[in-house]
Length: 312
Image 1 (cartoon, rainbow, N blue to C red):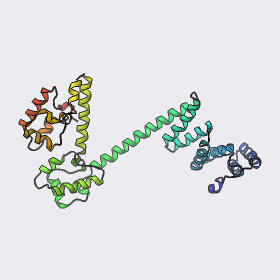
Image 2 (spheres, rainbow, N blue to C red):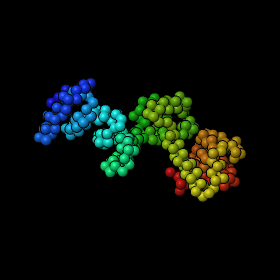
Image 3 (cartoon, rainbow, N blue to C red):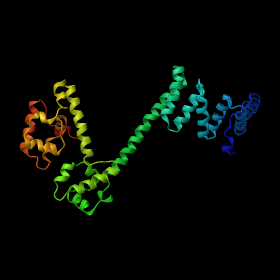
Image 4 (tube, rainbow, N blue to C red):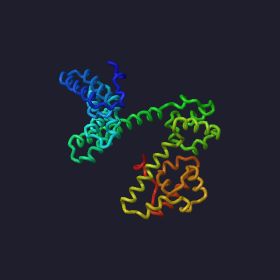
Protein backbone atom coordinates (compact mmCIF):
# COMPACT_ATOMS: atom_id res chain seq x y z
CA UNK A 1 0.00 0.00 0.00
CA UNK A 2 1.32 3.48 -0.89
CA UNK A 3 1.45 5.58 2.27
CA UNK A 4 1.42 8.81 0.26
CA UNK A 5 -2.01 7.86 -1.01
CA UNK A 6 -3.13 7.16 2.54
CA UNK A 7 -2.53 10.67 3.90
CA UNK A 8 -6.02 12.05 4.62
CA UNK A 9 -7.02 14.96 2.45
CA UNK A 10 -9.31 16.47 5.05
CA UNK A 11 -11.85 19.23 4.61
CA UNK A 12 -14.95 16.99 4.43
CA UNK A 13 -17.83 17.22 6.91
CA UNK A 14 -19.93 14.12 6.43
CA UNK A 15 -20.15 12.54 9.90
CA UNK A 16 -22.56 9.82 8.80
CA UNK A 17 -20.30 8.49 6.00
CA UNK A 18 -17.32 8.83 8.31
CA UNK A 19 -19.08 6.76 10.96
CA UNK A 20 -19.72 3.95 8.48
CA UNK A 21 -15.99 3.84 7.64
CA UNK A 22 -15.22 3.78 11.36
CA UNK A 23 -17.38 0.68 11.70
CA UNK A 24 -15.42 -1.01 8.88
CA UNK A 25 -12.18 -0.06 10.61
CA UNK A 26 -13.35 -1.49 13.92
CA UNK A 27 -14.19 -4.80 12.24
CA UNK A 28 -10.79 -4.85 10.53
CA UNK A 29 -9.07 -4.26 13.88
CA UNK A 30 -10.91 -7.21 15.43
CA UNK A 31 -9.74 -9.36 12.54
CA UNK A 32 -6.16 -8.06 13.06
CA UNK A 33 -6.17 -6.66 9.54
CA UNK A 34 -4.23 -3.49 10.27
CA UNK A 35 -3.86 -2.30 6.68
CA UNK A 36 -7.58 -2.56 6.00
CA UNK A 37 -8.19 -0.67 9.25
CA UNK A 38 -5.82 2.06 8.10
CA UNK A 39 -7.63 2.32 4.76
CA UNK A 40 -10.95 2.65 6.56
CA UNK A 41 -9.67 5.29 9.01
CA UNK A 42 -8.25 7.20 6.08
CA UNK A 43 -11.66 7.14 4.37
CA UNK A 44 -13.31 8.23 7.62
CA UNK A 45 -11.03 11.27 7.79
CA UNK A 46 -11.62 12.15 4.15
CA UNK A 47 -15.37 12.10 4.86
CA UNK A 48 -15.03 14.07 8.09
CA UNK A 49 -11.76 15.89 8.78
CA UNK A 50 -12.96 16.68 12.33
CA UNK A 51 -13.24 13.00 13.29
CA UNK A 52 -10.70 12.97 16.14
CA UNK A 53 -11.23 9.28 16.90
CA UNK A 54 -10.33 8.36 13.32
CA UNK A 55 -7.20 10.51 13.45
CA UNK A 56 -6.14 9.05 16.81
CA UNK A 57 -6.67 5.42 15.79
CA UNK A 58 -4.99 5.98 12.44
CA UNK A 59 -1.95 7.53 14.15
CA UNK A 60 -1.82 4.57 16.53
CA UNK A 61 -1.68 2.04 13.69
CA UNK A 62 0.70 4.14 11.59
CA UNK A 63 3.10 4.10 14.53
CA UNK A 64 2.86 0.31 14.73
CA UNK A 65 3.72 -0.11 11.04
CA UNK A 66 6.72 2.24 11.30
CA UNK A 67 5.20 5.32 9.69
CA UNK A 68 6.34 7.59 12.51
CA UNK A 69 6.37 10.85 10.58
CA UNK A 70 2.77 10.50 9.43
CA UNK A 71 1.67 9.37 12.89
CA UNK A 72 3.43 12.40 14.41
CA UNK A 73 1.73 14.74 11.93
CA UNK A 74 -1.72 13.42 12.81
CA UNK A 75 -1.10 13.61 16.57
CA UNK A 76 0.33 17.12 16.30
CA UNK A 77 -2.87 18.13 14.58
CA UNK A 78 -4.94 16.61 17.36
CA UNK A 79 -2.83 18.16 20.11
CA UNK A 80 -3.10 21.63 18.54
CA UNK A 81 -6.80 21.61 19.38
CA UNK A 82 -8.09 22.85 22.73
CA UNK A 83 -8.39 21.10 24.95
CA UNK A 84 -5.90 18.51 23.70
CA UNK A 85 -6.75 14.89 24.47
CA UNK A 86 -4.49 13.36 27.13
CA UNK A 87 -3.97 10.10 25.23
CA UNK A 88 -2.96 12.03 22.12
CA UNK A 89 -0.43 14.05 24.11
CA UNK A 90 1.09 10.93 25.67
CA UNK A 91 1.32 9.06 22.36
CA UNK A 92 2.89 12.11 20.73
CA UNK A 93 5.40 12.31 23.59
CA UNK A 94 6.35 8.68 22.90
CA UNK A 95 7.00 9.46 19.24
CA UNK A 96 9.00 12.55 20.14
CA UNK A 97 11.17 10.56 22.55
CA UNK A 98 11.79 7.87 19.93
CA UNK A 99 12.99 10.65 17.59
CA UNK A 100 15.25 12.10 20.36
CA UNK A 101 13.13 15.26 20.45
CA UNK A 102 13.18 15.30 24.24
CA UNK A 103 12.19 18.93 24.81
CA UNK A 104 8.99 18.43 22.80
CA UNK A 105 8.26 15.16 24.62
CA UNK A 106 8.59 16.94 27.97
CA UNK A 107 6.29 19.72 26.80
CA UNK A 108 3.55 17.23 25.91
CA UNK A 109 3.86 15.47 29.25
CA UNK A 110 3.81 18.74 31.18
CA UNK A 111 0.52 19.62 29.50
CA UNK A 112 -0.87 16.30 30.75
CA UNK A 113 0.47 16.81 34.27
CA UNK A 114 -0.83 20.38 34.40
CA UNK A 115 -4.30 18.91 33.86
CA UNK A 116 -3.80 15.81 36.00
CA UNK A 117 -0.74 16.07 38.31
CA UNK A 118 -1.21 12.49 39.51
CA UNK A 119 -1.47 10.88 36.07
CA UNK A 120 0.57 7.73 36.69
CA UNK A 121 1.62 6.96 33.13
CA UNK A 122 2.62 10.55 32.41
CA UNK A 123 4.66 10.80 35.63
CA UNK A 124 6.56 7.60 34.91
CA UNK A 125 7.15 8.50 31.30
CA UNK A 126 8.37 11.98 32.28
CA UNK A 127 11.13 10.33 34.35
CA UNK A 128 12.12 8.19 31.37
CA UNK A 129 12.22 11.18 29.03
CA UNK A 130 14.31 13.26 31.42
CA UNK A 131 16.73 10.37 31.94
CA UNK A 132 17.02 9.88 28.17
CA UNK A 133 17.58 13.59 27.68
CA UNK A 134 20.37 13.62 30.26
CA UNK A 135 21.97 10.54 28.68
CA UNK A 136 21.73 12.17 25.26
CA UNK A 137 23.49 15.29 26.56
CA UNK A 138 26.23 13.17 28.14
CA UNK A 139 26.73 11.24 24.89
CA UNK A 140 26.82 14.46 22.87
CA UNK A 141 29.34 15.98 25.29
CA UNK A 142 31.50 12.88 24.97
CA UNK A 143 31.34 13.09 21.17
CA UNK A 144 32.29 16.76 21.28
CA UNK A 145 35.23 15.99 23.55
CA UNK A 146 36.37 13.25 21.18
CA UNK A 147 36.12 15.60 18.20
CA UNK A 148 37.98 18.32 20.05
CA UNK A 149 40.71 15.92 21.18
CA UNK A 150 41.17 14.72 17.62
CA UNK A 151 41.45 18.29 16.36
CA UNK A 152 43.91 19.29 19.09
CA UNK A 153 46.17 16.42 18.12
CA UNK A 154 46.11 17.37 14.43
CA UNK A 155 49.56 18.46 13.19
CA UNK A 156 49.76 22.12 12.15
CA UNK A 157 51.40 20.82 8.96
CA UNK A 158 47.97 19.52 7.92
CA UNK A 159 46.71 23.09 7.56
CA UNK A 160 47.43 25.58 4.80
CA UNK A 161 50.22 27.78 6.15
CA UNK A 162 53.09 29.54 4.44
CA UNK A 163 56.57 28.02 4.52
CA UNK A 164 57.68 30.84 6.80
CA UNK A 165 54.92 30.16 9.32
CA UNK A 166 55.56 26.40 9.25
CA UNK A 167 59.26 26.89 9.84
CA UNK A 168 58.71 29.29 12.73
CA UNK A 169 56.32 26.91 14.47
CA UNK A 170 58.62 23.95 13.87
CA UNK A 171 61.61 25.76 15.41
CA UNK A 172 59.48 26.69 18.43
CA UNK A 173 58.52 23.04 18.94
CA UNK A 174 54.88 23.70 18.10
CA UNK A 175 53.71 20.54 16.37
CA UNK A 176 49.94 20.38 16.88
CA UNK A 177 46.89 22.65 17.04
CA UNK A 178 46.79 21.93 20.77
CA UNK A 179 50.26 23.45 21.14
CA UNK A 180 49.00 26.69 19.57
CA UNK A 181 46.11 26.83 22.01
CA UNK A 182 48.51 26.48 24.93
CA UNK A 183 50.77 29.41 24.02
CA UNK A 184 50.11 33.15 24.15
CA UNK A 185 50.48 35.72 21.40
CA UNK A 186 53.16 37.41 23.46
CA UNK A 187 55.24 34.24 23.56
CA UNK A 188 54.93 33.82 19.80
CA UNK A 189 55.88 37.41 19.09
CA UNK A 190 58.92 37.16 21.39
CA UNK A 191 60.38 34.48 19.14
CA UNK A 192 63.06 35.55 16.67
CA UNK A 193 61.80 36.10 13.10
CA UNK A 194 58.16 35.64 14.19
CA UNK A 195 56.43 38.73 12.80
CA UNK A 196 53.00 40.29 12.68
CA UNK A 197 52.26 38.83 9.23
CA UNK A 198 52.89 35.29 10.45
CA UNK A 199 50.77 35.92 13.55
CA UNK A 200 47.83 37.17 11.46
CA UNK A 201 48.13 34.13 9.17
CA UNK A 202 48.03 31.67 12.07
CA UNK A 203 45.17 33.50 13.82
CA UNK A 204 43.16 33.40 10.59
CA UNK A 205 43.74 29.65 10.21
CA UNK A 206 42.61 28.99 13.77
CA UNK A 207 39.59 31.29 13.45
CA UNK A 208 38.40 29.30 10.42
CA UNK A 209 38.29 26.28 12.73
CA UNK A 210 36.56 28.11 15.58
CA UNK A 211 39.69 28.50 17.73
CA UNK A 212 42.20 31.13 18.76
CA UNK A 213 45.79 31.34 20.00
CA UNK A 214 46.08 30.78 23.75
CA UNK A 215 42.49 29.52 24.04
CA UNK A 216 43.39 26.53 26.24
CA UNK A 217 45.64 28.78 28.31
CA UNK A 218 42.78 31.22 28.86
CA UNK A 219 40.36 28.44 29.80
CA UNK A 220 42.81 26.99 32.29
CA UNK A 221 43.44 30.33 33.95
CA UNK A 222 39.73 31.16 33.95
CA UNK A 223 38.99 27.91 35.77
CA UNK A 224 41.85 28.57 38.18
CA UNK A 225 40.55 32.08 38.84
CA UNK A 226 37.10 30.74 39.66
CA UNK A 227 38.66 28.16 41.98
CA UNK A 228 40.47 30.95 43.86
CA UNK A 229 37.21 32.89 44.20
CA UNK A 230 35.43 29.84 45.59
CA UNK A 231 38.27 29.04 47.96
CA UNK A 232 38.28 32.56 49.41
CA UNK A 233 34.49 32.63 49.73
CA UNK A 234 34.48 29.22 51.43
CA UNK A 235 37.07 30.43 53.95
CA UNK A 236 35.03 33.54 54.67
CA UNK A 237 37.62 35.87 53.15
CA UNK A 238 35.09 38.13 51.43
CA UNK A 239 37.48 41.10 51.57
CA UNK A 240 40.18 39.22 49.67
CA UNK A 241 37.61 37.84 47.23
CA UNK A 242 36.48 41.38 46.41
CA UNK A 243 40.09 42.29 45.55
CA UNK A 244 40.21 39.80 42.69
CA UNK A 245 38.07 41.97 40.45
CA UNK A 246 40.30 45.00 40.84
CA UNK A 247 42.99 46.03 38.36
CA UNK A 248 46.61 45.02 38.90
CA UNK A 249 47.52 48.73 38.80
CA UNK A 250 46.22 48.90 42.40
CA UNK A 251 49.22 46.79 43.44
CA UNK A 252 51.51 49.72 42.56
CA UNK A 253 54.00 47.55 40.73
CA UNK A 254 57.20 48.80 39.13
CA UNK A 255 57.19 49.67 35.44
CA UNK A 256 59.23 46.54 34.68
CA UNK A 257 56.77 44.19 36.42
CA UNK A 258 53.77 46.00 34.95
CA UNK A 259 55.12 45.63 31.41
CA UNK A 260 55.68 41.93 32.01
CA UNK A 261 52.02 41.53 33.03
CA UNK A 262 50.87 43.58 30.05
CA UNK A 263 52.58 41.09 27.74
CA UNK A 264 50.43 38.37 29.30
CA UNK A 265 47.33 40.59 29.08
CA UNK A 266 46.89 40.27 32.84
CA UNK A 267 44.50 43.07 33.74
CA UNK A 268 43.02 42.11 37.10
CA UNK A 269 44.36 40.76 40.37
CA UNK A 270 42.16 37.72 39.78
CA UNK A 271 43.95 37.10 36.47
CA UNK A 272 47.31 37.35 38.22
CA UNK A 273 46.65 34.92 41.08
CA UNK A 274 45.52 32.31 38.53
CA UNK A 275 49.17 31.95 37.48
CA UNK A 276 51.83 29.85 39.20
CA UNK A 277 55.40 31.04 39.81
CA UNK A 278 56.66 28.60 37.20
CA UNK A 279 54.24 29.91 34.56
CA UNK A 280 55.36 33.49 35.13
CA UNK A 281 59.07 32.63 35.11
CA UNK A 282 58.53 30.72 31.87
CA UNK A 283 57.68 33.97 30.10
CA UNK A 284 60.55 35.59 28.23
CA UNK A 285 62.00 38.63 30.02
CA UNK A 286 60.01 37.85 33.17
CA UNK A 287 62.70 37.53 35.85
CA UNK A 288 62.99 36.59 39.49
CA UNK A 289 63.06 40.25 40.53
CA UNK A 290 59.62 40.91 39.03
CA UNK A 291 58.30 37.68 40.53
CA UNK A 292 59.53 38.56 44.02
CA UNK A 293 57.98 42.02 43.77
CA UNK A 294 54.61 40.59 42.73
CA UNK A 295 54.65 38.03 45.54
CA UNK A 296 55.33 40.75 48.11
CA UNK A 297 52.52 42.96 46.80
CA UNK A 298 50.06 40.04 46.82
CA UNK A 299 51.07 39.02 50.34
CA UNK A 300 50.30 42.55 51.54
CA UNK A 301 46.73 41.95 50.33
CA UNK A 302 46.49 38.51 51.91
CA UNK A 303 46.75 36.81 48.50
CA UNK A 304 49.27 34.63 46.68
CA UNK A 305 49.98 33.09 43.31
CA UNK A 306 48.43 29.73 42.55
CA UNK A 307 50.54 26.89 43.91
CA UNK A 308 51.63 23.89 41.87
CA UNK A 309 49.16 21.61 43.67
CA UNK A 310 46.28 23.67 42.27
CA UNK A 311 47.79 23.96 38.81
CA UNK A 312 45.79 22.28 36.06
